[in-house]
Amino acid sequence: MPLITAPVTAPPDTDTGGGGATPVPLPEVGTATAAYTDPTGVVWPLTSSSLGWFTLAAGVSGLGAAPYDLITDPHPRGGARLRHVQAQPRAIVWPLHVYGETHVEFIGRWRALANAFTRTLREGPGWLEIIRPDGSRRRIAVYYQEGFEGRGTKGSGIISDSAVLTLWCEDPYWLDTQPQAVHRETGQASDFLVPFPTVSSSQVLGATQVSNPGDVDVWPTWQITGPATAITFTREDTGDSFVLDMTATPHGPLLAGETVTVSTDPPRVRAGTGENLVAGLNWPAAVLWSIPPGRTAVTFQLDGAEAGSAVDLTFYPRYETA
Image 1 (cartoon, rainbow, N blue to C red):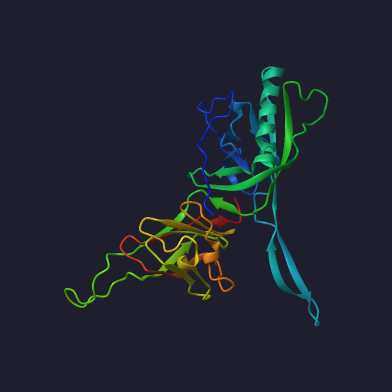
Image 2 (cartoon, rainbow, N blue to C red):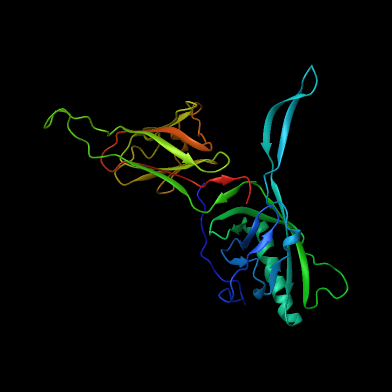
């Protein structure tokens, strides 16, 4: 589903303009910078020591390929056969060192960082983002699990201390920060006989090649702009399809300029006014299909379409590694 990108806001009592983030060698990644965005949208750079904290890069782990469970069946001739592969939640270990010129300065930074991570347990996930030297970015939704206790050794906790955070990720895949989008719009309909025999594209927007540059399947979001009475989406390689019949919903046909959004994960259909239209899907035959890596042929069909009717497909590529 689409991500809501929060505005970049400096954490309290810091100066993000001085020096900026410093690239560091991260295990499983290489030289990169990192930042954490808390649930309120505040961005906390993690690789800039001038802010009063920095990442202990040697202890970072969990940035590589996603973990998997393999479901197998014994084979009568020995060995086993792979029946199913299931991606598992990811755990990222991220050590931070926090310091200050005085105890008051140190403890203020320590408390602020602890709250920035632990609030994910109450307010929803934060985002850990890895930025490459070429400017490309990947991010993953994280929840605080444990680790903000400090070392508990003599001398620690006075003007400096280290925390080894474990961040839990319900979706183990990394997301691109830039969405992929496909737009198809109906042209002006024409009378078949005026001024001469003409074929109009007012019903079928046509076959479209959708490219997924990621490593794994994505679950797209669709926005349909009226007018339209029914919308059919078909994935040609599998034949999977779903139909949204607007006449079967309390809303009725989609009028010019009205929109409806279909989310494939989780399954959700909402009018532009927020009205729930999921009953308009052709259950149980509806398959809210995914888009695999590479190029996939899909077809959009809008019944009752006129000039201005459109379909917009949006997704964020997903990757195994940061």
